[in-house]
Amino acid sequence: MLSKKTKYAFHALSYLAENQEKGAILIQEIASNKKISQKFLESILLDLKKAGILGSKKGKGGGYYLIKKPEEVTLAKVIRLLNGPIAWLPCVSLNYYEKCADCPDEATCNMHLIMCQVRDQSLSIVENKTILDLISTK
Image 1 (cartoon, one colour):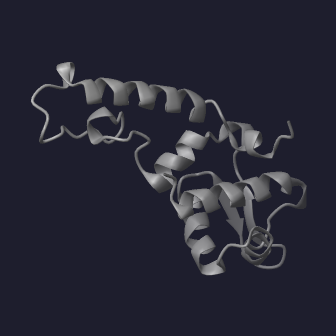
Image 2 (cartoon, rainbow, N blue to C red; image 1 turned 135 degrees about the vertical axis):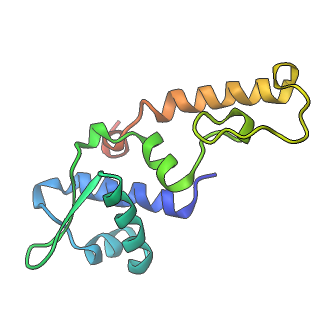
Protein backbone atom coordinates (compact mmCIF):
# COMPACT_ATOMS: atom_id res chain seq x y z
CA MET A 1 0.00 0.00 0.00
CA LEU A 2 1.24 3.50 -0.75
CA SER A 3 2.03 5.63 2.28
CA LYS A 4 0.19 8.93 2.75
CA LYS A 5 3.53 10.62 2.17
CA THR A 6 3.83 9.05 -1.29
CA LYS A 7 0.19 9.72 -2.16
CA TYR A 8 0.54 13.37 -1.15
CA ALA A 9 3.79 13.63 -3.12
CA PHE A 10 1.88 12.52 -6.22
CA HIS A 11 -0.81 15.14 -5.51
CA ALA A 12 1.80 17.88 -5.02
CA LEU A 13 3.81 16.88 -8.10
CA SER A 14 0.62 16.79 -10.16
CA TYR A 15 -0.31 20.28 -8.97
CA LEU A 16 3.16 21.61 -9.79
CA ALA A 17 3.03 19.98 -13.23
CA GLU A 18 -0.42 21.40 -13.97
CA ASN A 19 0.73 24.87 -12.94
CA GLN A 20 4.25 24.96 -14.40
CA GLU A 21 3.52 28.14 -16.32
CA LYS A 22 3.10 29.99 -13.00
CA GLY A 23 6.71 29.28 -12.02
CA ALA A 24 7.49 28.71 -8.35
CA ILE A 25 4.43 27.89 -6.24
CA LEU A 26 4.09 28.50 -2.51
CA ILE A 27 3.65 25.54 -0.19
CA GLN A 28 0.48 27.18 1.16
CA GLU A 29 -1.11 27.15 -2.28
CA ILE A 30 -0.33 23.47 -2.88
CA ALA A 31 -1.46 22.49 0.62
CA SER A 32 -4.70 24.43 0.31
CA ASN A 33 -5.58 23.14 -3.16
CA LYS A 34 -4.67 19.53 -2.43
CA LYS A 35 -5.96 19.45 1.18
CA ILE A 36 -2.58 18.45 2.66
CA SER A 37 -1.18 19.58 6.00
CA GLN A 38 1.36 22.31 5.24
CA LYS A 39 3.85 20.97 7.80
CA PHE A 40 3.65 17.45 6.33
CA LEU A 41 3.91 18.84 2.79
CA GLU A 42 7.09 20.75 3.69
CA SER A 43 8.78 17.47 4.60
CA ILE A 44 7.63 15.81 1.38
CA LEU A 45 8.77 18.68 -0.83
CA LEU A 46 12.18 18.75 0.88
CA ASP A 47 12.63 15.04 0.13
CA LEU A 48 11.69 15.64 -3.51
CA LYS A 49 14.09 18.58 -3.66
CA LYS A 50 16.96 16.50 -2.22
CA ALA A 51 16.23 13.86 -4.86
CA GLY A 52 16.63 16.43 -7.64
CA ILE A 53 12.99 16.41 -8.72
CA LEU A 54 12.09 19.87 -7.37
CA GLY A 55 13.82 23.19 -7.00
CA SER A 56 12.92 26.03 -4.68
CA LYS A 57 13.20 29.77 -4.71
CA LYS A 58 13.12 32.05 -1.67
CA GLY A 59 11.63 35.50 -1.34
CA LYS A 60 9.04 37.27 -3.45
CA GLY A 61 7.85 34.96 -6.20
CA GLY A 62 9.34 32.05 -4.31
CA GLY A 63 8.12 28.54 -3.79
CA TYR A 64 8.69 25.13 -5.34
CA TYR A 65 8.89 24.16 -8.99
CA LEU A 66 9.69 21.09 -11.07
CA ILE A 67 13.31 20.78 -12.17
CA LYS A 68 12.54 17.80 -14.35
CA LYS A 69 9.83 17.57 -16.96
CA PRO A 70 6.70 15.72 -15.74
CA GLU A 71 7.34 12.99 -18.31
CA GLU A 72 10.82 12.37 -16.82
CA VAL A 73 9.65 11.63 -13.27
CA THR A 74 8.50 8.02 -13.02
CA LEU A 75 6.04 6.86 -10.41
CA ALA A 76 8.59 4.18 -9.46
CA LYS A 77 11.19 6.82 -8.57
CA VAL A 78 8.78 8.64 -6.25
CA ILE A 79 7.51 5.41 -4.68
CA ARG A 80 11.03 4.18 -3.93
CA LEU A 81 12.08 7.56 -2.60
CA LEU A 82 9.18 7.99 -0.18
CA ASN A 83 7.64 4.56 0.26
CA GLY A 84 10.64 2.24 -0.04
CA PRO A 85 10.59 -1.07 -1.89
CA ILE A 86 8.00 -1.79 -4.52
CA ALA A 87 8.23 -5.54 -3.85
CA TRP A 88 5.87 -7.18 -1.35
CA LEU A 89 8.60 -9.38 0.13
CA PRO A 90 12.21 -8.42 0.90
CA CYS A 91 13.51 -11.51 -0.93
CA VAL A 92 12.12 -10.26 -4.25
CA SER A 93 13.13 -6.62 -3.95
CA LEU A 94 15.56 -5.41 -6.59
CA ASN A 95 16.86 -2.47 -4.55
CA TYR A 96 16.25 -3.58 -0.94
CA TYR A 97 16.89 -7.33 -1.13
CA GLU A 98 17.01 -9.35 2.08
CA LYS A 99 16.94 -13.11 2.34
CA CYS A 100 13.87 -14.43 4.15
CA ALA A 101 14.86 -16.16 7.38
CA ASP A 102 12.15 -18.81 7.04
CA CYS A 103 12.91 -19.80 3.44
CA PRO A 104 15.36 -22.67 2.86
CA ASP A 105 15.64 -22.20 -0.94
CA GLU A 106 14.38 -19.22 -2.96
CA ALA A 107 14.76 -21.16 -6.21
CA THR A 108 12.07 -23.64 -5.17
CA CYS A 109 9.90 -21.39 -2.99
CA ASN A 110 6.56 -20.91 -4.75
CA MET A 111 5.78 -17.77 -2.77
CA HIS A 112 9.08 -16.24 -3.91
CA LEU A 113 8.40 -17.19 -7.52
CA ILE A 114 4.87 -15.73 -7.48
CA MET A 115 5.97 -12.53 -5.71
CA CYS A 116 8.69 -12.07 -8.36
CA GLN A 117 5.92 -12.10 -10.97
CA VAL A 118 3.87 -9.61 -8.94
CA ARG A 119 6.94 -7.36 -8.63
CA ASP A 120 7.70 -7.55 -12.33
CA GLN A 121 4.13 -6.72 -13.35
CA SER A 122 3.94 -3.82 -10.88
CA LEU A 123 7.31 -2.48 -12.00
CA SER A 124 6.34 -2.67 -15.66
CA ILE A 125 3.55 -0.23 -14.87
CA VAL A 126 5.12 2.23 -12.41
CA GLU A 127 8.43 2.45 -14.27
CA ASN A 128 6.57 3.40 -17.45
CA LYS A 129 4.10 5.84 -15.90
CA THR A 130 5.11 9.38 -15.02
CA ILE A 131 3.78 12.50 -13.38
CA LEU A 132 2.54 13.51 -16.82
CA ASP A 133 0.29 10.42 -16.82
CA LEU A 134 -1.24 11.61 -13.54
CA ILE A 135 -2.36 14.89 -15.10
CA SER A 136 -3.19 13.76 -18.65
CA THR A 137 -6.84 13.53 -19.54
CA LYS A 138 -8.00 10.26 -20.96
